[in-house]
Length: 132
Image (cartoon, rainbow, N blue to C red; front, side, top):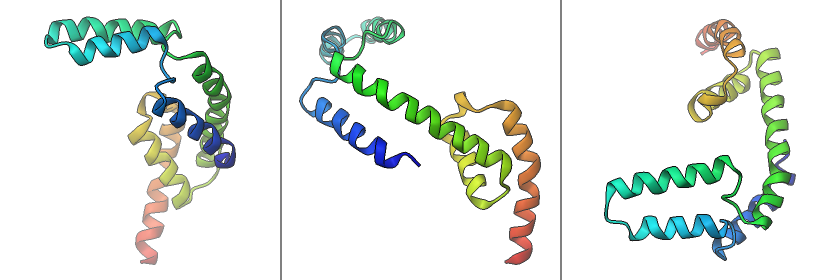
C-alpha cells in the first residue's frame, strides 16, 4: 500500500543525499566536525547539537523538508492500515506486520494493540502447527 507514492519520493531523497543537498548547512557543518573529531567527548557534544537541530526541525535542507512533508503522511497512513489490519485479521500476514513493528518500530508500537494482538496470535500459531 502506498509504495507507488513512496518510491518516487524516496528516490528524490536519495538523489538529494547523493548530491549533498539533503542536510541543512548547519547539519553539514556538524557532520564535518564529527568526521574530523578525534575526541569522544567532542563527539558527544556534536551528537547533542545534531539532536537539537532535529528537535527544532533544522537538520534538513528546504528541498528535503518538502519531500519529507509529503512522505510522512503516507507513512502514517501505512501505519494506521497495518494497525487496523493486525487488529481485525488473525492471519500470518498480520502476525508478520506485528513482528516487524515490534522489531523495527518498537518505540511506536501501540501497547494496547500489542496486548490484544498477543492474545490472538497464540491461536494462529496453534492452527499453523496443527495444519503442518
